[in-house]
Image (cartoon, rainbow, N blue to C red; front, top):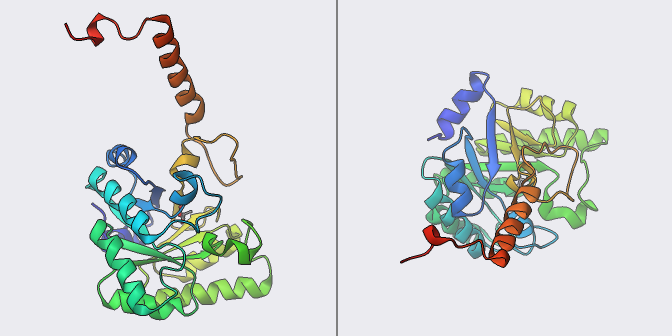
Length: 263
Ligand code: KIV
């Protein structure tokens, strides 16, 4: 299983890291058999598992249930648990409680969106022995402040702010950083200036690794097709076809047959 040291070494050696999201036991079990390095139990669960239109509604207790299910399915993978909306914005004690829930559910590390005053919380968590992954660029928990899901850091000022925040997160002790929806050139600049692994989503190819939401990668929702996603399967069509064939077999009397019945 990967750990923070082996992940860093892989990047130091010039390898690319692979991360994918998962939220349940069955898919975690499959990912556990693959070459994927890291499973992110993302708060994107709110959208792809629970059907909300943003990541805001999911809470720490729900995230802990997803983390525990993934851990049961993927005993051999390094698991990052996403800290949900506001989990680290009340008090340090509340932040510690939230992190404790995810770590005790089976995460090996946590991810926290944004920099700013979060860096004090991050430093405390790191000092307490918790590996923290940062997340900058498009931070979906701030979707309403950002005016929608859109590419970030277009201006010179925002460009500099991202570089400063990335350095601050590294200095606070983050073992890794996710960059979401930022221009590829800027993401590459961040990756070249930081020592820690920078993992991109919609951030081009000049970073140290990539992350995709599992449902996007598998093509489970053909009507959602952001340009930065590459689909490796048309799962929506495959699954629809399987359900329809089952329904047809039941209706025709073909299922179950004698072998699928008890004497
Ligand atoms: O929650 C999530 O899936 C994420 C990824 C998009 C990085 O944070």
